[in-house]
Image 1 (cartoon, each protein chain N blue to C red):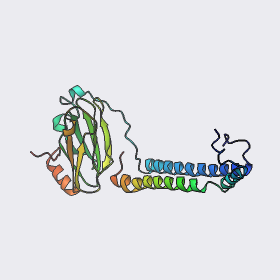
Image 2: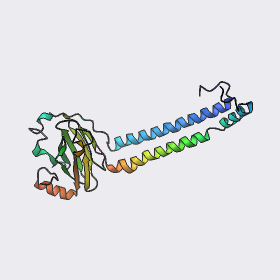
Image 3: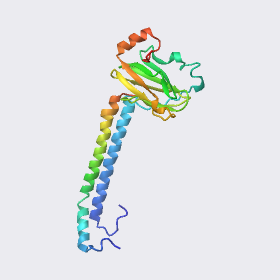
Image 4: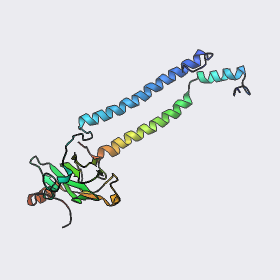
Length: 57
Length: 190
């Protein structure tokens, strides 16, 4: 039932806590890179495609 | 964060909460940046989707008023700008080739004689619906001489894929030279 049971020991919980306490660097790196790529594409389209195509009023 | 087990030691919880707060600020900053860009565009260039409501009787387009055949095409206004009037109908634009000058304010005025159409001018931001009973108006300027396709982009029937026109952008001086000789200009081959 408990997925942690097979390998679950007090030591592994401490290890998890140690990892969590170190901060979610991997998640931030992954999400940050993905977000920056999307934002860069948005800005790229705005500056390189939208603005050169002229103003509409 | 609130769903974390209560037995979670505070240090890991605090680290995660701090990371989430920072990420929220980061995401918020990106949203604010995009909003600033959009608002700046709207205020600095007055760039925004045309929103006026101007009506016309589609059953009388060819009989009287602004969209009679003799008034279609490009007309030079007293202020030096150009107004292009054309009609969308299944399955063509009239005139089929719009002639406009480069580097000049150009106002497009169009309406539909039958069903809902749409148009865009390739390589520009011109893009509008053309709805019967309403006049679509938008102003832009073409930086360079050239030729652009102007297809109907709203499915309007079984001939929709054949409905497209050209926009021919020519040198400003050449355009106004032609405009001195003709009241309404187009580039339809005669």
